[in-house]
Amino acid sequence: MSEETRRSLLRDCLVELRCHFTWELVIENVDMPDLEIRISETEFLDTNYSIGMHNLQAYLSHLKGQQDQALQSLKEAEALIQREQLGKRSLVTWGNCAWVHYHRGSLDETQIYLDKVKKVCKEFASPFCYRIECAEMDCEEGWALLKCGKQYYKRALDCFARALEEEPDNPEFNTGYAVVAYRLDHNEGTSLEPLRKAVSLKPEDPYTKVLLALKLQDLGKADEAEIHIEEALPRISQNYIFGYVAKFYRRKGFVEEALNFFERALQTNPLSTYLHFQIGLCHQRQLFQIKEAANMHPRGKDRERADQSIHLAIRYFEKTLELKPTYEIAYVNLAEMYSEIGQLEKAEEIFQKVLSMSNLEEHMQQEIHLRYGRFQQFHVKSEQRAITHYLKGLKIEATSHSRDKLLKALEKLVERRIHQNSRVLESWSLLGFVYKLKGDTSEALSCYEKALRLTGKLNPEF
Image (cartoon, rainbow, N blue to C red):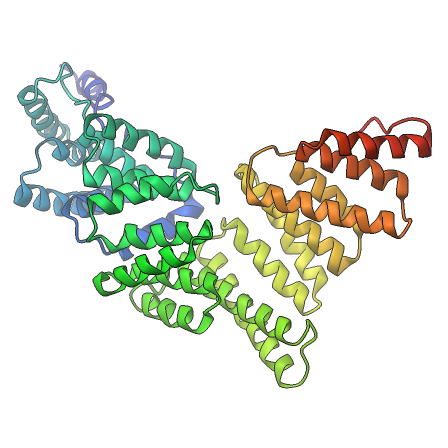
């Protein structure tokens, strides 16, 4: 048999495997450094998760053309497998080993790992030679997809859902499902029950407890959220969880407490994109607190403190974007901080960068149009451009808090213009549009009639 024929036959076997090489993980070069940092900083005590991280690091090394480093990561995963006797879950690591050896041209080694996979498949009576359809494999794929970023969250959720069909009360499967549901839940409350179930099945896990507290906080259940945070704190042994505790206190308005927790998390994870962004938000929150206390016009020492908060926020948002140039919401917050110190051209430049990004999630597009509209309305003093972007955001029909805020922002602006007798025809039409989106047909028709009486015909755009 020729070498080329052998390679072709081996590849036919390899594509049947369930592993990182067949899960269609497309990782852009610009996202790779941030992902590698997140893998290296992960402090999971769970052996299965550690094996998964070694596997993912191996795949990233392969993508970078570092096949020897990929094999080293896989050897570390194999050592854990041998210690734990993991059965079906070994197949992911062995599948990755087969693929890496194949890319290195080590066809004999490729065959050895394929034979290992085949043996396990036979033991578990799989109808396939080189794959098993089971909850454990769905779970492995789910964790890999979850770690690789938000573009894979829906697929990850499907993986954990399939696993739960087989084992509805498995603590790990429920944790995976709840974590992904939390990441996909844009203040709608859809992750509350999955998080409650995950916590009930594994009450000693502080991570899911803190996520449950954050979701309860989202939904205005502050007292219950506080109970879960207090229960979780003594159990936290992994510093990265303190970053989520800090987020809880930041949103509560306890900025100094939040910064203390963030600094604690940063000691272990000094290059964490998430932590730098959250610390930037803390300094931004401090700015807003200073402005509110000074009736929006800080002077003297308050002005100095406000300026310090702005410059610290800018520093942390810029560090966030240095670590992850695709972190879209960090651009928005950075632009807003520059607008606070009157650097409107710089703010505009940053806003344009994020407005030109492609493949953004719908709720994120809405948030960007909302914040840019506010920038135009309150800093640039261009109400027309603000209206344009409020409308662009509203044309995106996804349900979210940002969409509600867009409606309120547009409603407030046009009502003020009507009161000031400014652009009245356009404003009545826009107000009718707002009521239409709110589902108030009667009020919408009333507004359109007022516009109609002013012009004799309704603007066809509305």
